[in-house]
Length: 267
Image (tube, rainbow, N blue to C red):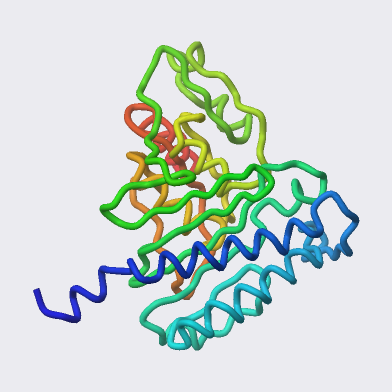
């Protein structure tokens, strides 16, 4: 194998950097958790707090200092098209689930990933309020707090999350088997729950961004599941367009049905 091909598929050395940076960003965010941080509204509907900005600033400074040739894509940083010229890009959400964070819910996380050619090569979710850390590398499995994780094996019942309108579109045979899980504002954490075997599947409504799912996607895939679009394709990340349409996450026959449902939305 030529040397450049080996390099282009290996981000092993990036994983410790991501884990350390995400851990410290989680420490920074926790200083504001349960307090009353200053909050602004983006687009009139989406909250962002000084905790988001503080964690984002730390991640940007730390990660780019270590990898100055990498691009940068973050929810809380104005996008710079220059990142499209970089071979690899950091894709970051300093607090995924800000709304829940501000409400005192614990299911939020710091999401960091390294992306090359549209694919995630290393992903970390740091969930400090839950004392949980997830990470994955391609072909090396997914882990939670150092223990390998896997999606739940199919059973008579299935617990899923997502918009009620979409769940109601599931076939009648599945309706009897379904339990609707409590909603979590953090999309990344919902995907991690599937990877960890505590949730079977979720619908992802349109307009999820790269920073919401780039890290969680790899963790789910390495745990035996998939995140797919209505055509059954895996999303690509860090391109010119960073927003996605409806997606489905899960495994096995359930995932196939979830994909059929979102495919029907475009019919």
